[in-house]
Length: 191
Image (cartoon, rainbow, N blue to C red; front, side):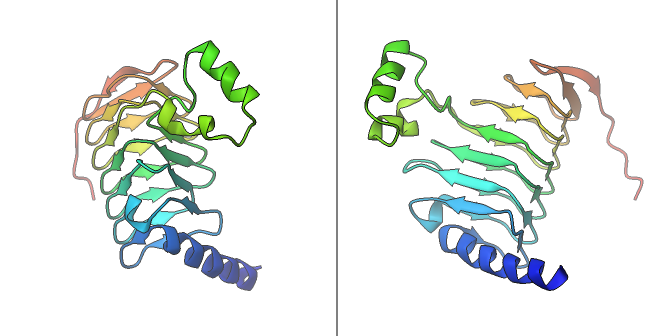
């Protein structure tokens, strides 16, 4: 199993790096995927571990700082801009979208469906969008959803299954749907 995993990781890593600029010592896991129009749209810092999908439409940008990991089955989808800081831990099955994916107008959605499911009306450029900023040293728990226009402050924690629709202050824990601050953290240097 080890040899198969290593070969698969090499192939996936090669494909990922054709669509994303990656820093030194960045590990691309065998479940990772990069979709972009050009390599400059997805920028990943040094010493990262990426096992997620990073998807940009023609105007989207994803920037991930050094020493950050984005785990299995997570999806980062950008129509305008997503910036993730350094030393972040983004757990499994996290969804980060800087847009609504589809227009909220029901008549426009009806036209989308009638146009065929591969028409240009399905492009994210027609959806409402606002950039997302995730500051340094943030931990986002499994199955969390980060919505458009949100800023998550430095050192914050987003609990598993949280739906973040509003900013999360630095050094706080946000939980629930919609996510609310449930605790303030006091940074401690124990290591």
